[in-house]
Image: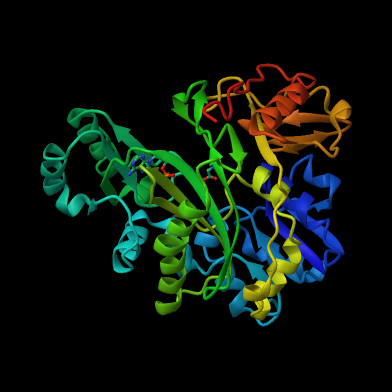
Length: 426
Ligand code: AMP
Ligand code: GLY
């Protein structure tokens, strides 16, 4: 099979690493990829939103399977674009239709979907410029803290947890009246704050049946002890100790099954990953959000722990045999620690040489996944806020984290920073 993978982050490097292990994968192309993905296939300099260029690459390289890493092309309708084109229809697309990708693309859509299917989620209301005054009254009467969410995609910056009514009002005005995120914040969801521990669960579905392929806990804050600004994710661990059989049964019965049944009932065409962003509130799972793709850096621990052939799973998803797939997991623990650029998640420099990579080749214990890098001549340079995700196996989470930190000590670039306390509470 010739596979084209879209994206350029650590998630894509981990997916590439996993897919090339499959005997179904004859050739892998990554668009645009990074310095790490080039190790496993050919990087193609294509913009992931340019569907015409993607089509031409698929025809030229005789692609049989398109795996979509990030959400933008899915929300923009890449699945539908392939279905509608007689030259592309035969290609297996791993990712939902645009209609189904609204689970991630519109917070208001996903909240209504959960309400329709009785899936536990925080109480909420939605507002636009049309009922702005009503929204102000809603905020004034709301308990603290107040969670405000831009309806559309806002590059991970669209959620604010306001500690006071004044702050909430300011954010509300900024989003709706000053159009902070353009069209994406023309509608705002205001919801109750859920107090608990977050965990992400991942399933692969054909829109009717599903398989759980893993879970992880992400550390989103830049600072140690979960302080400071939100980032895309500074590290992950899996398995999470509280994800025992009893909790997982609740997640499947109350959340995953009703979600997949809801997709089927509403004829929302979905062939791909579902990311369930959950909050464990005193032992009960609630949905914080859906994403229509894998997480980053969650993928960097989920793929190393999944023993099942991923490309075979994609084929099973396509040919209606997903229910029969045998899913097995590595028994070890896994952790990933993200090395980021100085200044991230604020402004940061790019094009800084990354040193020490040659001494840290992937081995049986640790893998260096590239998140934001590019190759310039012989050098690997930084090309993003999140630069490298170092994943390790261990007999315990603490051992896995220690191994990743040891690897990171051999790597350097100007301003490099990583959290030393990933997995601290376990
Ligand atoms: P999202 O963009 O929906 O992932 O939200 C970003 C982050 O905001 C989540 O990962 C949570 O940490 C936090 N968050 C979102 N909604 C809530 C909520 N209702 N209660 C508590 N925290 C939330
Ligand atoms: N790590 C969170 C995400 O991928 O959305």
